[in-house]
Image (cartoon, rainbow, N blue to C red; front, side, top):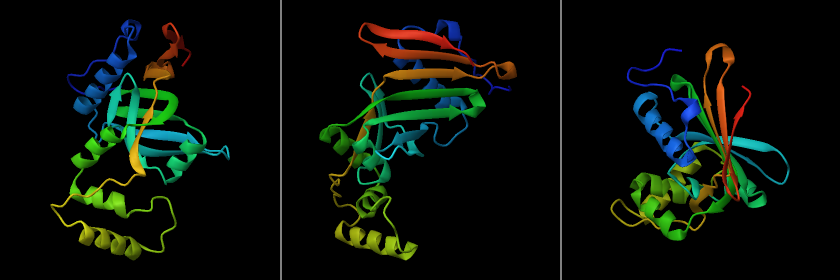
Length: 208
């Protein structure tokens, strides 16, 4: 594997006891070396009452000891599935760096103040789109979407405050299981798993 100039692989035998530190380092490495416009992009996997799994790409917008945060419309398919089964998994893949990061755990909503703070940081157009979209519901044609966006834009002109819809908020995936995956020669990859236990983190290596 040809690595980007200046980037060096992690010594997987010396990851340290705190997975949060490693996650932030890997995300920083991805921002600097991955060559991607959205190095914080992750696949969010959910499964509702019907048992059918679903996955889609979102952007990580927060990460601390409480969990990993993404934002969405709770009336979307993912919102419905999480309401039925409040557990999810996130997968980051940085192919140029030969790394994957997996997070799974219980899902909870962020506090309103946290969602409000992120909402106001979004561009006006994204706010209007967030209000206008009946996400995941059937759409007759693209023109119907344009008409709805125009209606919301007229209601909230550029420069005005666009209120955050109550159903648009953040979802926090708890750090219950974290896996660091690093590519190895001949498909002999390195996999280190951190699992949250009452007494702290249980760390184990897994077969590739």
